[in-house]
Length: 298
Image 1: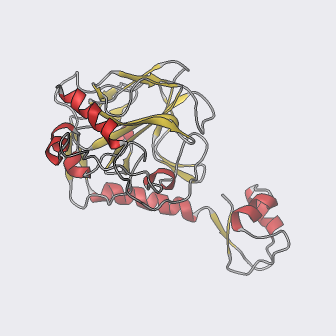
Image 2: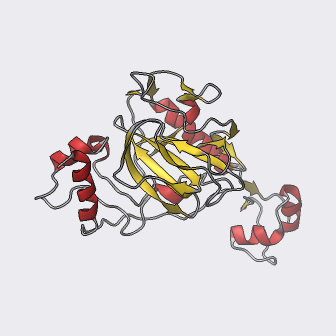
């Protein structure tokens, strides 16, 4: 029996494994794809699947041998896009490449929306231009962990790589792989499109380590379609900078009420209709605002 066949048997057996309960957060996003970590960082009840299957077919040693990064993650689930985990406190050096054939730019398109703040939210990926039906390739070799439809990402594929890195490919028109498939760098994993929460054909491309977002342009020179280096150094400062940017963006979505201000005045200032302000803040049009009250407008 080959390793690939053994892995596929594991996924069939997983259908009978009891599932672990993990708390969920609200599902919110912005146009172009999920931009807050909340929609997909934590599992809903019954979403998490631990990798070990029946002992006679699969053991912890099998998981460590056949599942990329299993020693880091300790589980293998095929439902939850990303699980919430703490950022590494010590510097971690990831080996990204050892030859020219072990990495590949997913698509050869220019950046339409970079990693970082966007529309008052954090955008945790890089959007790359493509035409519907264009092939989308795996950035590195690894094993498919997610391949399904998601209401925000649309058709989405997540691949885990041997160094613990995970890459996400969103808004695909078609998916060409299934969970448990072994893929090589440059292998077609789907076709480009605009499914899910998207306003036009593009690829939403994310890179993460232990669930923590990393700017894909730290790895790839998009214009050249090549890696910037054979290694990537991950340190606490990198993740702290992302956390601070997220906090700043979150803070900028609120207005502090001053003397004499009304919902209408706030509506005019930020160009947000009063009914929308009421819905965001769970107030009515007749509600009286207090000085110092924080009103969310995004």
